[in-house]
Length: 395
Image (cartoon, rainbow, N blue to C red; front, side, top):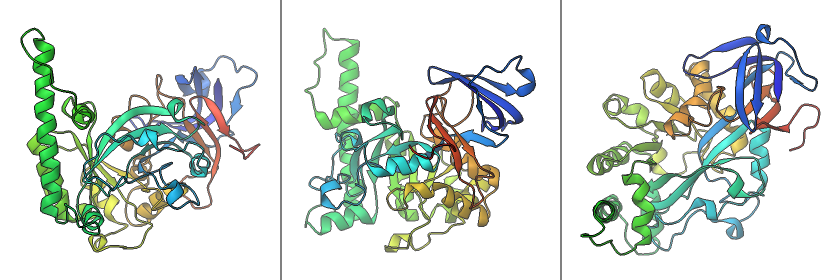
């Protein structure tokens, strides 16, 4: 229930660092933290961090963790339902294999929270879920579900349905399908609102599973996550979000560092930048650059670093941040891009992303500077439970 002798990097709004600190928690939530000088007594059994740096658990805000099975092909490939281009009713939660080996690898790398979502084959792919990476049953790992609605623009929907000789095979058709679906869902939402306000005089709209799945968007309970690489696809996402007054996040946004001035004028939540530890496997990745995250952050655009697991295996999330620092991102911004920034961008900052009273007791004790290659997590705690420590390297 108590960690002592910790170099606490809180990652809170003030960027507070406590060189010799303690962290207390109860029932999975942080109850107090501060300087060791404030402790009047240290109870038996307190965990001694040995003066090592302690950070909030890392967050990977865009993955397909648990949806594409470790060492499996079709048998474990559950990320894309490419039989229908519009599938907002699909829930990533229903496909996540919590026993997949990559969950353990995420924990060993200090990644304690992820957003996992359907793939990008469909213009509207379904509902993302925010999960802890520790557990055997996905229902007990939920931080927020749904956490977002996944949309996709650009080459992926085009190539998927061109192979099937089915719409959409152009960017125009992809955008048109999204607009058509959102327009129907918006009317459905408005009809439901009118019925709820005056049930005696208004008819309740006939239940529609796809429209129901999109209601959280119009209630502004979750954002739209738009997969977009090329600059024109990024601005199509902006255009659609404006038309329907959606809260939105740009995912990948490979060309964003080339158009940051124009993006700076928009009121979106932020960019989930990456992955960068991949090849340029398709034309829309032409401008992929390890400098992108640093350029965006220096110009005031909220930016999180992601792996897009399994595109880059999730255990290399910190390595992605190291590369971003090597290419010009500040060390402080890089660590924020793995903690408080993804939490804020994805609406999870009431639970995770910083070490503060009331938040989940998720933290990582590092053997040294987390942005040095030879550093490794010495201990990882999720919801107040030590799931990995330097005495026993088993999850």
